[in-house]
Amino acid sequence: MKEPKEFSYWKHPYQKWLLFLAGVLQILCLFLNVREFPEYRHLLEIGFLNTSQWENYFVGQCMQCALNILLIVLFFGCLLIGCFARSAPSARRAEGILLLCKAALWGVAGLLLRFPAFGSTCFIWGLILIALLCCGAFSLWKSRKKPANLD
Image (cartoon, rainbow, N blue to C red; front, side):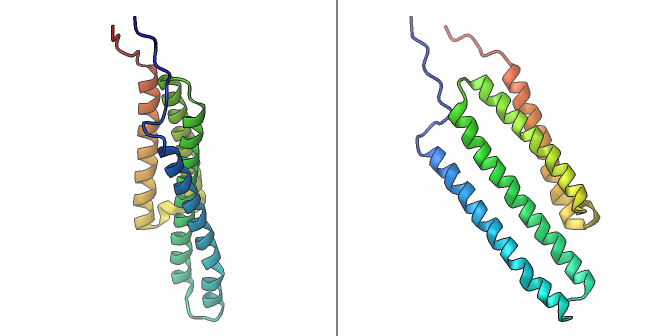
């Protein structure tokens, strides 16, 4: 009789470091996006940008920052799930809960930042929201399935 193999979330040992590096790079990108904001604010104050151009820039900048935050949470959330998961179903369940929580926060953030009011941001926001909801529901459904008996 075979002994049960210990569960590992990672297929290769370097994957956790790649997720950590990706999260750090997204934090750097978020910092650079936020740092750029005062320069454009100055262009509005001197009259180089009119209010509609400023509003388009501001919504686009908010979208970039929201995407950076979404990816930061995704990368570090997967890293934490991988470190603490003890079985495949618990890892799937944690992934599903993480994705559904992110979907809820993404929906609220999009409505507060008025992404649906603009054409391209509305499409991207809606597409990401649907993807998060579907992937979260699929992960929860997969976590409930019983594994096939491999005797």
